[in-house]
Length: 168
Image (cartoon, rainbow, N blue to C red; front, side):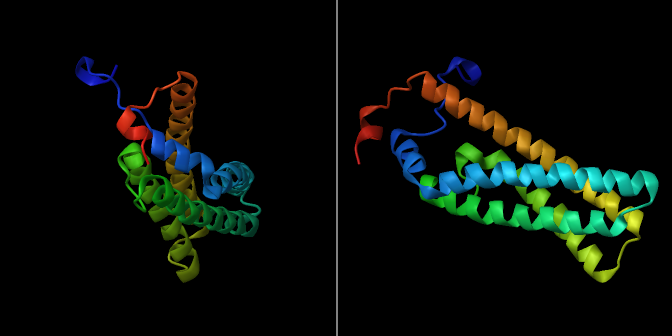
């Protein structure tokens, strides 16, 4: 049940689920997400090492750039996926709040790139900005994992589509 005792709105209609399951972009997202997370973990280790020891600043900076490029890739392909499945590039109702937080994640990562390129921040401040971007990324990743879990539970529960949803 949803708020106020009303039945919960399914995450996907029958047609959306069919488009999701047949789209190659679903596989692309399924591959990019764990790759990006692995890059994040390596980069986080390098950033923390540089902050704690003062060593490895260059490696940490490069790792954040690589993480940001992976983020851009997953955001572009994710918006294509959203267009295919929901008919809009971003902010489909089913993923509205995930997309809102994704914009913050993008802004922080992009601010990092801009600060790095312009020498606008010292090394330690730059790494702290990277940590802020990473904190937002962790929140966003948790949002998507919860949504993935909800979709799996919905699918396992045998959501019976309404007749209007099943028609092409």
